[in-house]
Length: 639
Image (cartoon, rainbow, N blue to C red):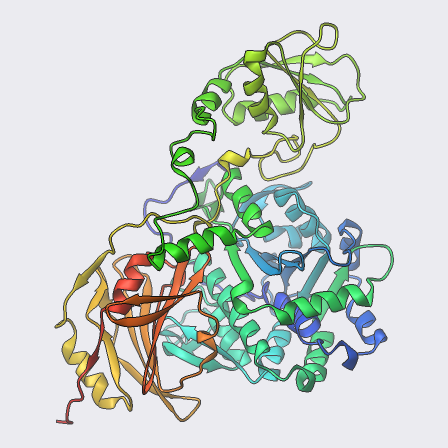
């Protein structure tokens, strides 16, 4: 926890300030304007791609910290929301949320990992600060160093763009269809100074400006919701790209990217066109369902004595999010989808693992618990001052209760860290201690090599990573303790948390049915604490297709909805994860990792779907129960 951290007594109110929230825009321009659009690389000449990859003087210093992207290998892109091109940024705050995007041609996937702008992290040479202060303190170079230290990842590209780039890309594609979860409105008529917005709930096409309003909003909810909105817009824009005439749009999109984007690539020579084209093909070939969305979560509170709102994430939470970003678990998603379809019981872990036992029946948790109490002596084997002291302190912080510093080892040329055990019964403990490091060896002690302690740790020069867990102390979070994001964990199959009430809000539904120009389905089964928000919204989609939206709010303040439209081929219904039979209805299930994001069904006169909340707070079985319980509202004659 951060020094002076004070957990909140209740919900922390969002702070309203005028700001530019655009970290994610660079992803858009990079993936769409450079990688996703120029599929038509033949439309662009060599010098134009070179121009895109020539960084400005502001970005160039960061280039020395970047790794060279290799053909056919994954590439990590650091996206900085920088408003240095704008004249109205806030004093002292020139960067917003940072995002990593991973293009993985090996795993055929794109991953996004977002960091809350208030995440409390160590910034090299500065100290503990909010992550968005790295850019203002040391520009793009320090931002790269901060993210590298936090994640222990190579970064191959870095990019920044301005708001004009985002608006231009969306508008060049003819807008983007987004499922808006609730009413968003603020006109500052009461003297506030928040970003203005005016959006109705429901699936609709947004212009670049309105999409920007939606994605940057954070007036009445949290940074986690804002990140979810950002990633939702990016995912839906990728879906829009898949349906677009890229050859026709390539020139306009290139012009937007060239005017608004600053990109740097790692390496001392230019990135090959072949490498760029490989990323282009990946960006176009993948479906929106192949995009994995993650964010670092944590506890929201205030930092004493400043009173600033901060997010504190544990090393295990950060390491788990990074693991998921690097290797999205398709097997977990498939297991959760199978569970939803009733094909098998909850999967992902067998009963032995769930009980904390290894495959051979040994008690992993028990061995680890004992390892925490075994005497450990740490030696300096690399000649770097204070190495043994730092590692010993970090081991204590990880829960080891009997750690001492033994001074120098027999020599200073140890490359890898080595964990020695004195007797065979101590070998399992040595393995657990070695798991704390980024690449440590385990060996039996020999007299004269180091003192014969039960466990001896000789700190080498390699593996001294600057990671979320160790912050330069050479430690990493053990794999067994890393907390993968909730959408990477197969949930338990609990009973749905719903109530059945065919009469609830019947008058409101009948009033909506009178206005609707299509058959209307309403939820006779709803999440137990939910209430209807406002009247049923009826409108025309694409200017001619009837549509309606029912918006519900849970007691915790999460919004979910039921949507209907006579447009039978909306982009949002592309590529369902599973088809499920429930209550005599064929349901199309759409997963976000292991969570049900949406459940849809088709009728002769239209399509209908239930949308989960932005952070997918409704559990999988509840989503299925709501969709299965939706019933048509009979046509009521106008009164």
